[in-house]
Length: 158
Image 1: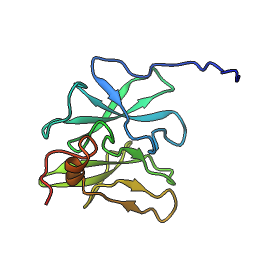
Image 2 (image 1 turned 180 degrees about the vertical axis):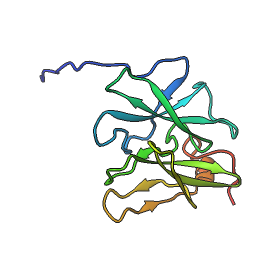
Image 3 (image 1 turned 30 degrees about the vertical axis):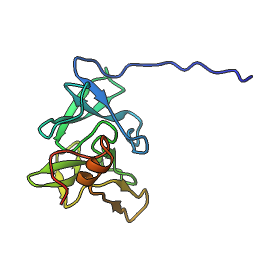
Protein backbone atom coordinates (compact mmCIF):
# COMPACT_ATOMS: atom_id res chain seq x y z
CA UNK A 1 0.00 0.00 0.00
CA UNK A 2 1.28 3.47 -0.92
CA UNK A 3 1.88 6.19 1.63
CA UNK A 4 0.13 9.42 0.81
CA UNK A 5 1.67 12.80 1.44
CA UNK A 6 -0.65 15.33 2.98
CA UNK A 7 -0.59 18.65 1.19
CA UNK A 8 -1.70 21.90 2.78
CA UNK A 9 -5.00 23.30 1.62
CA UNK A 10 -5.37 27.05 1.44
CA UNK A 11 -8.62 28.91 0.83
CA UNK A 12 -8.08 31.70 -1.71
CA UNK A 13 -11.55 33.29 -1.91
CA UNK A 14 -14.26 34.26 0.53
CA UNK A 15 -18.03 34.60 0.30
CA UNK A 16 -20.69 35.65 0.16
CA UNK A 17 -20.29 35.17 -3.61
CA UNK A 18 -19.32 31.86 -5.20
CA UNK A 19 -16.03 31.33 -7.05
CA UNK A 20 -15.16 28.67 -9.60
CA UNK A 21 -12.97 28.10 -12.64
CA UNK A 22 -14.73 25.36 -14.63
CA UNK A 23 -13.11 23.32 -17.35
CA UNK A 24 -10.06 21.33 -16.33
CA UNK A 25 -7.85 21.77 -19.40
CA UNK A 26 -7.49 25.57 -19.33
CA UNK A 27 -4.58 27.65 -17.99
CA UNK A 28 -5.78 28.94 -14.64
CA UNK A 29 -2.37 30.10 -13.30
CA UNK A 30 -0.36 32.90 -14.92
CA UNK A 31 3.27 32.25 -15.93
CA UNK A 32 4.58 33.59 -12.59
CA UNK A 33 2.30 31.33 -10.55
CA UNK A 34 1.19 34.32 -8.48
CA UNK A 35 -2.25 34.92 -10.01
CA UNK A 36 -5.10 32.59 -10.83
CA UNK A 37 -8.22 33.25 -12.85
CA UNK A 38 -11.67 32.73 -11.42
CA UNK A 39 -15.30 33.35 -12.17
CA UNK A 40 -17.70 34.75 -9.58
CA UNK A 41 -21.48 34.46 -9.30
CA UNK A 42 -24.09 35.42 -6.75
CA UNK A 43 -25.78 31.98 -6.91
CA UNK A 44 -24.84 28.32 -7.36
CA UNK A 45 -28.11 26.46 -6.94
CA UNK A 46 -29.57 26.61 -10.47
CA UNK A 47 -28.52 26.74 -14.12
CA UNK A 48 -27.70 30.20 -15.50
CA UNK A 49 -30.48 32.17 -17.17
CA UNK A 50 -29.86 34.34 -20.26
CA UNK A 51 -29.60 37.49 -18.12
CA UNK A 52 -27.25 36.06 -15.49
CA UNK A 53 -23.83 37.66 -15.47
CA UNK A 54 -20.67 36.04 -14.17
CA UNK A 55 -17.74 38.18 -13.10
CA UNK A 56 -14.29 37.42 -14.50
CA UNK A 57 -11.49 38.05 -12.07
CA UNK A 58 -8.01 37.43 -10.78
CA UNK A 59 -7.00 36.08 -7.39
CA UNK A 60 -3.62 37.46 -6.25
CA UNK A 61 -1.89 34.73 -4.28
CA UNK A 62 1.19 36.59 -3.06
CA UNK A 63 -0.80 39.26 -1.24
CA UNK A 64 -3.84 38.62 0.89
CA UNK A 65 -5.89 36.51 -1.53
CA UNK A 66 -8.78 38.46 -2.93
CA UNK A 67 -10.94 38.42 -6.06
CA UNK A 68 -10.27 41.38 -8.35
CA UNK A 69 -13.01 41.77 -10.95
CA UNK A 70 -11.64 42.62 -14.41
CA UNK A 71 -14.66 41.89 -16.66
CA UNK A 72 -18.13 40.35 -16.92
CA UNK A 73 -19.63 37.73 -19.21
CA UNK A 74 -23.07 36.60 -20.30
CA UNK A 75 -21.66 33.50 -22.03
CA UNK A 76 -21.01 30.86 -19.41
CA UNK A 77 -22.22 27.64 -17.85
CA UNK A 78 -21.27 25.72 -14.74
CA UNK A 79 -19.55 22.89 -16.57
CA UNK A 80 -17.34 24.84 -18.98
CA UNK A 81 -17.43 28.35 -17.57
CA UNK A 82 -16.64 31.00 -20.18
CA UNK A 83 -13.61 29.03 -21.45
CA UNK A 84 -11.61 31.54 -19.40
CA UNK A 85 -7.84 31.10 -19.55
CA UNK A 86 -4.48 32.82 -19.80
CA UNK A 87 -3.26 32.96 -23.39
CA UNK A 88 -0.27 30.61 -23.64
CA UNK A 89 3.09 31.54 -25.09
CA UNK A 90 3.04 35.26 -24.34
CA UNK A 91 4.71 37.34 -21.66
CA UNK A 92 1.86 39.85 -21.78
CA UNK A 93 -0.89 39.37 -19.17
CA UNK A 94 -3.51 38.34 -21.73
CA UNK A 95 -6.63 36.35 -20.98
CA UNK A 96 -9.35 35.09 -23.29
CA UNK A 97 -12.97 34.29 -22.47
CA UNK A 98 -16.33 34.04 -24.18
CA UNK A 99 -19.10 36.62 -23.95
CA UNK A 100 -22.45 37.39 -25.53
CA UNK A 101 -22.68 40.71 -27.33
CA UNK A 102 -26.04 41.57 -28.80
CA UNK A 103 -27.11 38.63 -30.98
CA UNK A 104 -23.90 36.58 -31.04
CA UNK A 105 -21.37 34.78 -28.90
CA UNK A 106 -17.81 36.12 -29.23
CA UNK A 107 -14.44 35.71 -27.57
CA UNK A 108 -12.66 38.60 -25.90
CA UNK A 109 -8.90 38.89 -25.54
CA UNK A 110 -8.03 41.22 -22.68
CA UNK A 111 -4.85 42.63 -21.20
CA UNK A 112 -5.62 42.43 -17.48
CA UNK A 113 -3.20 45.24 -16.60
CA UNK A 114 -4.23 47.84 -19.20
CA UNK A 115 -7.85 46.77 -19.77
CA UNK A 116 -7.27 46.82 -23.55
CA UNK A 117 -9.64 44.42 -25.34
CA UNK A 118 -9.98 42.81 -28.73
CA UNK A 119 -13.13 41.02 -29.87
CA UNK A 120 -12.99 37.84 -31.95
CA UNK A 121 -16.05 37.09 -34.12
CA UNK A 122 -16.68 33.61 -32.65
CA UNK A 123 -16.48 32.08 -29.17
CA UNK A 124 -13.51 29.85 -28.49
CA UNK A 125 -13.58 26.26 -27.32
CA UNK A 126 -9.89 25.45 -27.31
CA UNK A 127 -6.55 27.13 -28.06
CA UNK A 128 -3.29 25.73 -29.36
CA UNK A 129 -0.36 26.25 -27.04
CA UNK A 130 2.20 27.03 -29.73
CA UNK A 131 2.76 29.79 -32.28
CA UNK A 132 0.98 30.77 -34.32
CA UNK A 133 -1.90 30.44 -31.89
CA UNK A 134 -5.10 29.02 -33.34
CA UNK A 135 -8.51 28.58 -31.79
CA UNK A 136 -11.29 26.06 -32.28
CA UNK A 137 -14.87 27.31 -32.01
CA UNK A 138 -18.15 25.58 -31.18
CA UNK A 139 -21.84 26.33 -31.62
CA UNK A 140 -22.57 26.90 -27.92
CA UNK A 141 -26.30 27.49 -28.58
CA UNK A 142 -26.62 24.05 -30.16
CA UNK A 143 -24.50 22.56 -27.41
CA UNK A 144 -26.96 23.97 -24.84
CA UNK A 145 -29.73 21.98 -26.56
CA UNK A 146 -27.86 18.75 -27.27
CA UNK A 147 -25.77 18.70 -24.07
CA UNK A 148 -27.68 20.68 -21.42
CA UNK A 149 -25.27 22.23 -18.93
CA UNK A 150 -22.39 22.37 -21.43
CA UNK A 151 -23.58 25.15 -23.74
CA UNK A 152 -24.60 28.76 -23.32
CA UNK A 153 -28.15 30.08 -23.00
CA UNK A 154 -29.45 33.34 -24.40
CA UNK A 155 -29.28 32.78 -28.16
CA UNK A 156 -31.36 30.42 -30.23
CA UNK A 157 -29.52 27.85 -32.34
CA UNK A 158 -29.79 28.94 -35.98
